[in-house]
Length: 366
Image 1 (tube, rainbow, N blue to C red):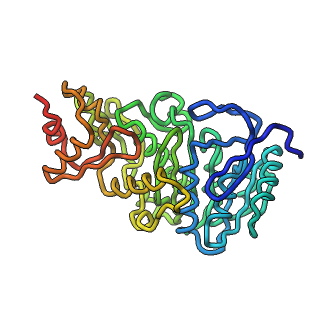
Image 2 (tube, helix red, strand yellow):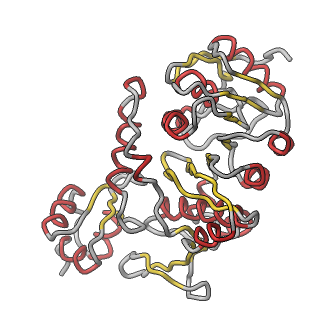
């Protein structure tokens, strides 16, 4: 099929490629019949390149299963230094034609392009790393991806239906992710933990466990990069990280709860969101820019801190004081001997291991 729509050339990482020349509005984007390209997810693709290079063995088979314009798969093929064997797949013939042209413009020695339904493809092909990067929710693709996954393989999952996961559409979240959720001050982290928890529960049905390598959120998307293991014992251990929370309306603090508790949120993942071993070996490449380097630094800083964050303005409002600068809050908490650091999930917010009484004091509440 020929490319039958206007295109424009963009450069991302070390790759120059064509994308549909259509107007872009701020936000997660609108569905269309044309291959989708979201420039706001460039940082996520930077991280995917780095993770593929650091976690996949040399010569590993990698699938970009919903390749659209081919940006993610081509970047991994061109930029990762471990000679990966890339397959770019899409069931949309318009996307396949665009991928073929973009692959011609960015030659790499080990690229295969396929035109199949994702679930049918992974039912008959097995990969060491599968990227599931859909428009909207990954739910329709997870069963097939998890069933196909094997011990030691990796699965990368993106979600752009953040309004659902953050609690703005609770009925849709319960229907789609089988989780009860409502909006909280730490809504972005709640969303990430609901997504991670859903992946863990779905994997558990196949006696497979998932270990988070890196789960993060930025702009209008969430990303979860996990390692697969197998066996009942590992799966039970993985599922022990699931739980429920409630939010104290007077403080905004997220506490453990039971499923039957008032306003309970969950089930969601309460374990670590990053592997400090892998994260410590990731470094943004010079051409990737400051946003990716800053994200990695933020994630390293957050590692080891308890789940959930405080939003500065909301916390000050609850305490009846004017919002101080976040840097002042961090310094005051640090002076008490506790850790506190800005969170990547949201500007003007921070994570800390300080208890609520300490947080309250550093805000100077009466």
